[in-house]
Image (cartoon, rainbow, N blue to C red; front, side, top):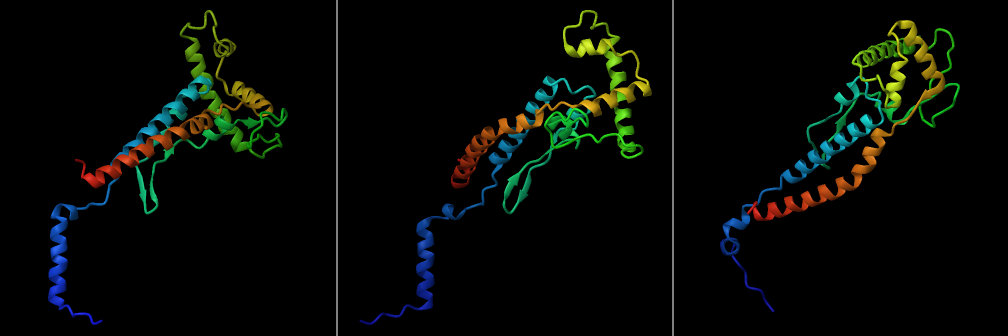
Amino acid sequence: MGYSKISQRKRQDAALGFIDLMGEDKLDYRAPRFTAVEDALSAVAANFIQQAINNLNASDRNASGKLEGSITPTEIIRTVKGMSIDVMINDYYKFIDKGVKGWQSGTPNSPYSFKKPDGSKHKGERSLMVEALKGWLKSELRKRSGGENAHPISRREKRRKKITDAKTQTAIVVAGIIRRKGLKKTNFWTKATNSIQKDLKETVGQAFKVDIINSITNGN
């Protein structure tokens, strides 16, 4: 059985006719921008940050406020693999989160540990710690001078009553105690991370559906 030949012109006409049947509006397709997903990521990041700050304050380890102030979200990051958002924080957050093992006590159970004093080694590290503690002692003294500790109601306030000065020697003594006994973990960051996992999946998942629908309907 033979096949009739169709000219190039007729094939073009047939193709144009098919396009006309589809309608011009169907060809007005734009790749989805996923703006709902961007908004969802920003909302999840904000929720995560608030949880981390609440956990930090609840652990009573936010004396200077510097760690809290360093927690900030980045802009939305777009790559060929998708979108993401990061949360920035001072690097020492991991010691507050996971704690630091005391060289003598061996506690808490942490991937980080203080080294046993051995002369000049780690001198710079100790100096930084002493300076940080002097600032903390000064802050505690200022809070104590407000008179709110006349009738201590918390362990922090009871400890604050024992602070009498912010001298270098006092800071050295405190630093030695901390290095020997260790720094308790708070899990403020770990708790926030674990808590946000379900929220991230559900919130971004719903936003993705919205963006897909909007891309099909052009937002109408």
